[in-house]
Every structure is written in C-alpha cells, then in structure tokens.
Length: 98
Image 1 (tube, rainbow, N blue to C red):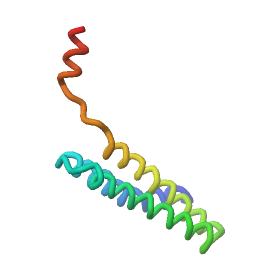
Image 2: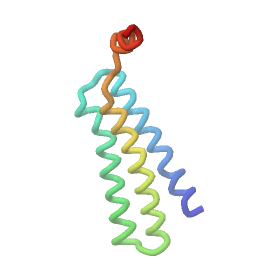
Image 3: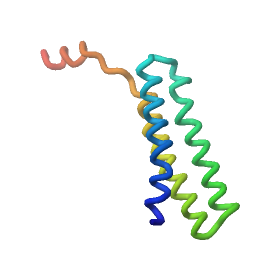
Image 4: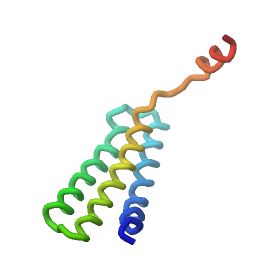
C-alpha cells in the first residue's frame, strides 16, 4: 500500500503529461513548448519532496517522497519524448542498401 497508492496517484497526471508532450511533438511545436509539461512536473516533484521531508515527516512524508519519485519518472519519460530527434526514412533506407 505504501508504494501502490503514490504510484496510482502519480499515474493519472503522469499519463496526461506524457500524452500532452506526445501531442505537442506531433503538432511540431517548438522544443520550448514541448518541454514545458515535463518541467512543470519536475517542479511539482520538487515541491512534493520538500513537503514530504520538511513539512510532514514520518510515514506520510515518505508517501509524499514516493509520489515525488514516480512523478519525476514520468517527467523524465516526457522529457525524452520532447527532446527525441525525429528519425527519417531516408537514413534507414540508406543503411539497408549499404
């Protein structure tokens, strides 16, 4: 329960952030706009870490820490999606012909 509840609490906004980043990438928006969801998620993760360590403490504070950890994982995935370079089919065809 100590890990499952923070994971499930981070799962819904995490999937939303990943889908939003993927949609921004598909719309060919600038890198700055594509990175905003992951940056805000990192910010929220830092705030939850601060709340868990400084304000709450104890077992409930550890739950906030786990929530922050899972949010940071989703933010890393979203950042990877935002910064991934597009692959071209020309490069793949040239590699196959060589």
